[in-house]
Image (cartoon, rainbow, N blue to C red; front, side):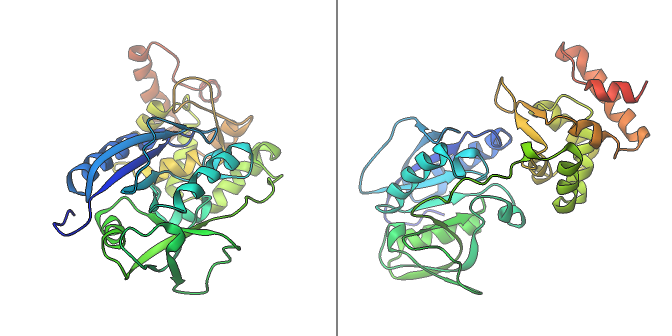
Length: 315
């Protein structure tokens, strides 16, 4: 990816450590290594974005700085509220004076469920290293209703093709590249009143079934048999699918069926009644195999891995 003629930049890589992000840590490590080795950057520093909208880590400010935010854009700090106000204020302050983009680990088909869905089109930079506030965007279809004072931000898949388009935008003045673009609003709208906590377990599961892939819905039923902590969920996922796709597990984590639980990152709990509803969607023979797998793992883990509801169903 590195070229001899491209300007050298310092990269600030911001990792979103919100409640839905722990499963993407291995991808972050690979991305950081690739950017440090092959990107047009003199150095890479990492900051951590917390769920309260604040940042942890050394903050660098200079004329050659660009920022990549690695996020699924689904944590509470991406939505209206106190955390969102803090985070968007920071994001806008960066985008007014430097290049900023978001690397989205979710597949493009899932972006519409996030706070930054992205609209496909063409993005133009008037000069080398243009700040986001200087970019112009033309959608392939109808232009999005961005709102007055909104600033465009490219949303990228974590792949060479998407990143190279962004590098071209950074390094070549007057260029135009294909891109998916979201907009940072001047002000966040009022908080929404509808939340998963206001729905019954049956309503939550029906809502998820209406939008989820078949693989994700099947996986959710099996995950309800175990304790929904990320290592356990990944173990169940590998047993259910011969070639597990991370996006299917991400669908479940982002579904509203779960909420973050106290403890290590990647600790969750099912909302009240949801596990019981999900378990009824799984054939008894399949459920038995999942429970047996978790029982085998319990001895080495030295803690319960099987959900009480699953145990009761199989008695």
